[in-house]
Length: 154
Image (tube, rainbow, N blue to C red; front, side):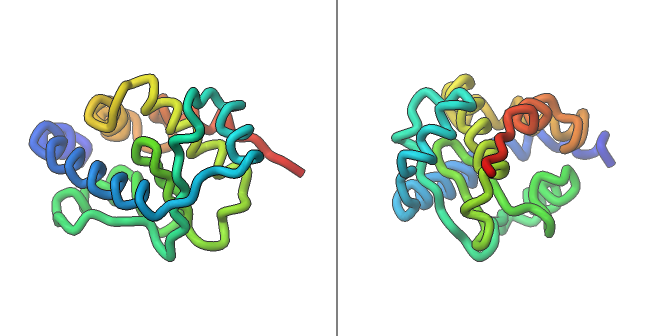
């Protein structure tokens, strides 16, 4: 199936970027700003502009309605039943009950850093999704990097 997804990825990318940008804009409108502890955590993992981050506490992570995007997200492990965090630019989605998890937040904030380094959702997603297809979620270099920057607070 990886080969099929790799072939489909160029056609899926514009739709994935459009979906991610819409979700991000919504979360940036209703999400909350980081408090001083959240800003410090974001800075520790490399975020240059923590004041731009908005955290949206949600009952469930957003899922694409587009059947092909939904299938690709499930197939790569990007979105699925066990996921409790998702970052799209400066928008960080966190499932209810996990908002105080510093390990999760530092992981997601590292993705914010990665978006900053890439320059935009449009520039980040092709690299990220290509890694998902090539290496799988657990071994994708950007995920490995995010896990390496997880911080636990006692």
